[in-house]
Amino acid sequence: MNDTTTIRSEMEDYIKQHGLNITQFGKLSGLNPGTMSAILNGNRVMAVNQLDRITATLALPEGYFYEQYIQEYLNEASPNWRRIRPFMYRCAELNKLGCIRQALKLLMDNLLYSPLLFETAEVFFQEGKKDAAILLFECVAANERSQYSERLAFCQYRLFSLKLGGDQALNLLVAHQFEPYVDRLDETDQLDALKDLVNTYRSLRQWDKVNELAQQMGHKAQIQYNLEQRQTRKNGRESKKMSRPLFVYIAYANLLRAAVCDARKDYKQALQFTYAYADLSWVKETDPETVHWKGLFQHWAQVNTYVNRLMMGDISILPKYVEYIEGKKEIFSELLNIVEAANLYNIDVDHILGQFNDAILSYEQQPTSTDIYTQQVIPEQATRFWYELAKYYLSKGRYSNGFGYLFRAMEKSSEINNKTVIINCVGLYERFKKFAADEIQHQYQFYIKKVWAENEKKDPIVINF
Image (tube, rainbow, N blue to C red; front, side):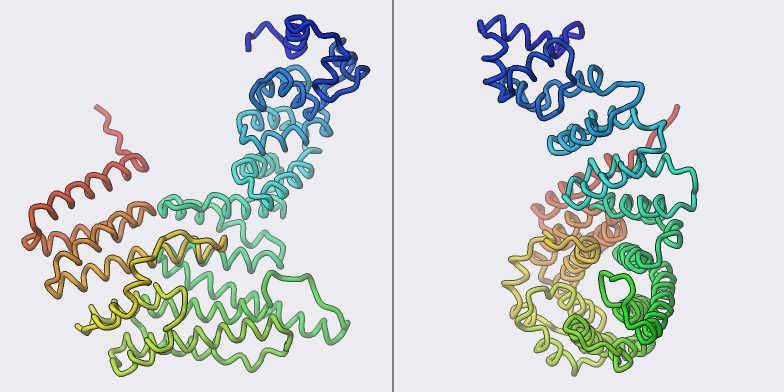
């Protein structure tokens, strides 16, 4: 669109070129003649839905006039929220983020718009308009005067959730940026924030952080649970509804601390934490949701007890463990435990891998759930599974299988920027490269160059001369 033209002049040119009058043009656009006349004469400000109708009549792409609309209709001394809000909705639907940025600049200097922008950002978040929500939450956060504002903390929580992705190095940065704001959240939001944050650190294998935050979550949840019990008995009413029953956060804290002990190979202490979350006899509630969660913790405790014993060298438990996981859909973490134990104690698990061969071959790393555990922890476990499987087969002299899984581990760890697994893959290849056929060596060079290229884009090294 030429800088000297306006939306009205474009409409007028179209009317002349097609030999129309205002009534005819209005009919084509779905607007009555009075409204169309007022718009063309400059006596009425167009709403964005009217602009969309006119744009369609002119056979132009959706949002074609949006940049011009900001300059001609929204750029006022006192911005009109009733026009700006629907405009931003349409921009979010069309993913015209540049227009949202321009619209936000009109509101930046007036703090009265912060609550309205926050409400809109929440709607975008709930509707899955991720990029648009980020822009609004960032704007609200930047304009909060008090660093201890609860709204600022909640904006940072939303930004943390929205910015987590497939790059573990960036996820670590996002987690560090959000962590100082957790204690500034409302008490009812703190537990979910801690749960999400600790699961992120768990996917990054930052075990000191997992242990620290799990303790915080368990402590805060215990205090809230005790208070809720007293208030319920005294007042006969419940407090604000949590996303999960309060006892879940207490039990989950123990599960996380057991995972920390597992990672540190302190399996005896891990068992103690496992016994702690297995015993939920102290939970008073008996509603269906409570029964559901208690059942889950009983299941996890049973599985993890088998794992602890297996990792301590009790091979006799392996048949029971396999029997327990048969028929389950998600078994990659369980298979990871089996292969890790096989590598640790030189166990032959060919028959088990054969039993679950179809599940292994059909696995696609495409989490469908939106919770942070599924989005972050499971992909990290998958990369380690391919690595451990490669080590298992290479150690047994089955080089074709071993190198094939090694390349898969390299590819998947590169996708999530898991540098630890990438380095381990390189080391494992170097250990067994004398057994690699020429074709395997060429494949390795291909993958290592691909990994280098992808990481160079994410984290380029700038050399100054």
